[in-house]
Image 1: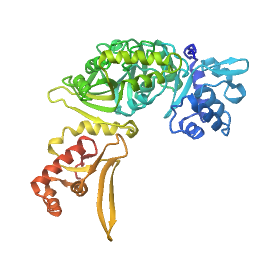
Image 2: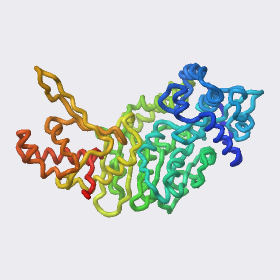
Image 3: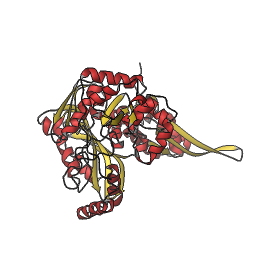
Image 4: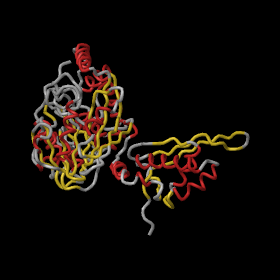
Length: 485
């Protein structure tokens, strides 16, 4: 199936966009109502084979919400009456739909994300300047961004504008760049639709539009895909191998203010040590760095996934797969790693690099957690000498078995249900020691009594306690207790 030619970017006056936002809000066009209506867990809804399911769900949803979901989310033609009292003329005037003999034909998608409404291209339009909507990498980047009040923020490769709009809530000013000027038009429309006026949009490749400038926060979901093509701006950088990620990480520190954070989505050619490449990019660059490794895929799986995501798994799909596999063969790339690098600019010696494995489904909004992890490096060498407590959102699981009329310990674990879902399985020693993470006294003062209770050599138990404490603090599961008043 040939791709549909992309429509012009949307527009409209400020008054029109205010009216459209109010009309959509009044109709219940927001995340919770849409998820409830379609019985889905996310607003990242594609047409695909689920379209027939969505259509049947909407049969029991009231108008105009059902009509707006069909038109603006599923990309289906609807009768003007299906969206009333939302004015059909208004939808046409701002460019989200066109009048087709009494029917409204969608020109783009408007997808809710939290309290935002985001404009993007319809999924079956795949011109080079296609503006992608919100996908899993977008939400992963958002979750792994440090959210704190700052003066300035930068979103590189803004696309539909999600990251810039999220940053606008806690930054006085935001600069959003993209080489795709059509994407900038969509992002600017989205900002105006949401009443956001502190974002400046600049055209240009990667960091070129901000040469010589520094920011307190930088976020980027660049075209990091290791691809032999240049067909899609949002996916294909045109750079060989994984140099797009390595080059961007190398340039980023020069644009971070002292103490500023940067979060970037990356991919790399993975070898025997799957994290060797991203480590080499961040070592010695003047930043502390956390590499969050979300997964590794083989060459065929990578080629298939990105061609499916781009909607190119129909005509010429087999030939395209062969082309990608040949490209990976020339690169010696049997596996492709994916992840996010979070950096904090910190001048002086002693910058550190840490890595963590993370399945994406264990990730939630992690700003507070990330700041705990970066702050933890300052206390790692003194973990036995300060009172420690479990962080908010931590919980302890214990499993015991009834055996012969008495309870016998089986397993125990401490885990986080907020932020990054790290967890640690505890053996018998750890299951007892974890109770000492109550913020009342340093662990060193309690080691002797606990070791005696367990019948363990005190020196051996002290070494174990330090290893466990360092691990929990380093991963943000335990934190220094606040000073006693």
